[in-house]
Each structure stands twice: as structure tokens, then as C-alpha cells.
Image (cartoon, rainbow, N blue to C red):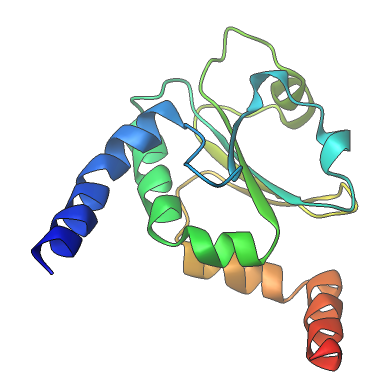
Length: 148
């Protein structure tokens, strides 16, 4: 029991470090560095959630990463992939397409449509509610119910 509590506590302490580095977590590909990404590779497969900032030390970026790290399972269940871009000097394809100014959170749906842009951090609960209202997500839920 002590080992389990230590492991959980260590996970909470390491969340800010993971947020700063935007690393891929063991066993998951949910966090991806967005500087060299082509959004077309996610078409009809994943819902990219893109987090922009002018620095990995931006307090809003760190807060957003903490929000996301706290409930990764809910995002994975909705086929979300989190792309991060914290270098404005590198004019990545994501920056060219979405043109962020400082911090920005953007959600792109599976068909490639830019669905949401937010200038401040959002909790996973708000993100998942937005995703759950999408017609394609509702269809996915219906199909999973029918299959089981």
C-alpha cells in the first residue's frame, strides 16, 4: 500500500515536469511534439488538440498541461492526440495554419475542420463535453453501444 501511495504521489509531482517537456508518456502516444507534424496523418483517425505557447515556461501552457495530464484516459477514449508547439521562431506547419498569438488551445475534428480556438487553458471536462457534442463522436458512441 505504501508503494502504491508513493507511486501515485510521484506521478503528481512529475506532472509539471512532463508538462514542460511535452514528452510521450510510457505506453501512450497521446503527447506529440507538433513542430514537425502534418495534420493530414490524423485525418479520420484522431482529434488533434493543439496547445501553443511562446515558451514552455508560459504559466498558461503549464496549467493546460496539468489539466490534460490529470485526465488523459478521458482524452484517449475520445481519440485525442495532444500536439504541442512552444517555439514561435520555428514557423511550423501548425503555426502557419492556425496563426496563434501567444497561448492558444485549438481542437481539430477528425475530418480536419478547426472546431475550437481558445486563448486560455481549458479543463478536460470542458474539452470532453465539447467533443461529446460533435455528431461524429455521438455516432461513435452509438456504434460502440450497438456492438456490445
